[in-house]
Image (cartoon, rainbow, N blue to C red; front, side, top):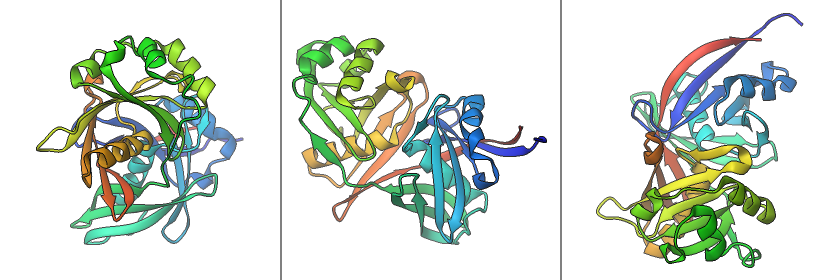
Length: 294
């Protein structure tokens, strides 16, 4: 097969500052690329997630996600970044101002509503409507304060609650007493990987217990050694679940989640309850637009 070129656009999602947020690679017009190359392209780029996206009908975009070593069902930050790229680069027809509704179709057939906010024809904030969020307690014999204390290397009294839940995939959610405890976490990756394997969960999302005022925000960290992620700077798919937990607890409609501080890649994730529906929102920043030769 002769050589061909693949356009690769990288972004930092959930941030507006240099070297912040969670990096992702976006491959637009991906249907022109033989699918057998998707895993190898993602491995070569070697970012946490690579999104392959293309328009399949008006305002409907098919999207697949790969880590450097496997395909995954969904990535929140890569979806936010992908639709920012599509909106910014002209793949989606812009509007002068306001919100434009488009749709993402996942490999499993699921269709997500996506809003792109425009200002003077420039794409800015991207929002995703979360699917139904579910919680379960069938692994209470495995996931409890004692088992979590061991993998996070903290005291049991530092833990307020432990919950399993998810929208796109299940995670372990742990609320902690304060930010000092959150910052002190030293995760046992093998212990956490075993917990995830035994409970069919993807990772562990740790967050502060109370929403701080006046900004109405919490702090969070995310770990998924099962998927090769020792820590992630911004986690959209898990953040929307954490957001719902805190929205319900504090009886508010909006919160901000600050993540990535310990990695020196600050990120901000916005969660909003609109008429009982949970929306995940964030800004992105273009990093690179180039070509890979294959």
